[in-house]
Length: 341
Ligand code: 5GP
Ligand code: MN
Image (tube, rainbow, N blue to C red; front, side, top):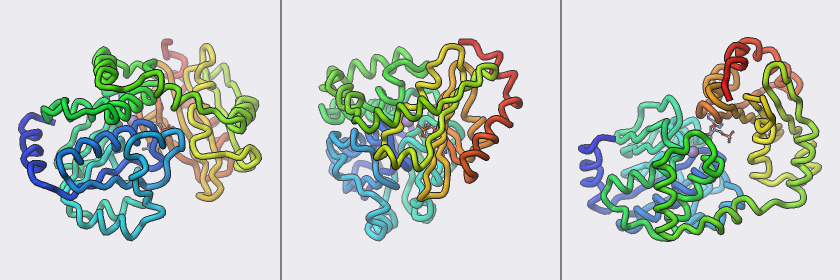
C-alpha cells in the first residue's frame, strides 16, 4: 500500500466506524493471531469491531486475548449477515479471495463496505480498495505489525497484541525455519518480545499440547506414509474411519505433512484427509526449495496457497485421489528432479 493510501485510510479511521474482520476458513495460528491483534488495535481506536470466522478454530489457539469474541459464522449466520451488511469497513486477513471464506462468500460479495486486504498469498482477487498484498511476507501477522507501523502507531501494540502477532509469525514460518523468514521477520519478532510476547510460553501453548489420541493418530499417519523415492515425493492418507477411531479433534492433523517432507531427499509431500461430512478429501501440499506447490494445487486440487505450502481438495474417493497424485507426478518430474536442497 502506498503512503497516500495509508493517509486516506487514516482519515477513514479518524471517526468511529462499523468494522468486520474476517480470517479464512479453518483459521490457523496466523489467521487467529492477525485478526485478534488487529481487533485489539481497532478497539483502541474506539471502533465498533466484530471478528467473524467462517467456522471454528483449533483449541490450542483459544488462549489468545479476544479469541473468545470471535463469532463462528456457522453458528451465528443471521447475526453475522446483518453485521456484514451494515459494515463500513471489512478487513480480509490471511486470504485474498472470498471463496476462501467458505459460506461467507455470498454475504461478503454482496457487502457495500470498503474492503481492506492484508495478505501474503499468491494471486489476490481484485475487490479491496486498500490492498496490502505481499507474497514475500512470512505471515499476515508480520504484515499487521508493518500495517500498524505504517499507520504510525506501533506504540499501541500491547502485550496481548504482541503475543497474537508473535504466534502467527511463529506458526507460519515453521518456528522461523522457512525461507520466508527474513532478517526483518526476525527483527519484528524480537520487537514483539520486547513489547511483551512471551516466546517460551507461546511455544509451549502452541506445540506442547499433544494429546495421547493425537500421538496415536500421528502413528497411524506415519504408518500410512508412502515414499515415492524416485519422484522425491512422500504422501500420507487418513480416512474418516482412522480419524474416528482415534477421537480426532480439530487441529490434530496440523503439521503431520511436515514429517513426510522432513525425509532426506524428499522435496514434495502431500497429505490427504477424508472429511466425510463435506464429502471431500482435504489435502495439504508442502515442498522444499523451488518446487512450486501453489501451481500444483491450483492445477490439480482446486486450491492454492504459497510456493512451499498450499492446500486444496478432491471430490473423489481416497483411492482415486491417490491414483490421481501418482498419475500427475510425471508432469512435474523435471521440477522434482532439478530442485536443489
Ligand atoms: P494448509 O495446508 O495448512 O491448510 O494450508 C497451506 C496454505 O495453503 C495456507 O496458506 C492456506 O491458506 C492455503 N490453502 C489451504 N487450503 C486451500 C484451498 O483450498 N484453497 C486455497 N486457495 N488455498 C488454500
Ligand atoms: Mn498465513
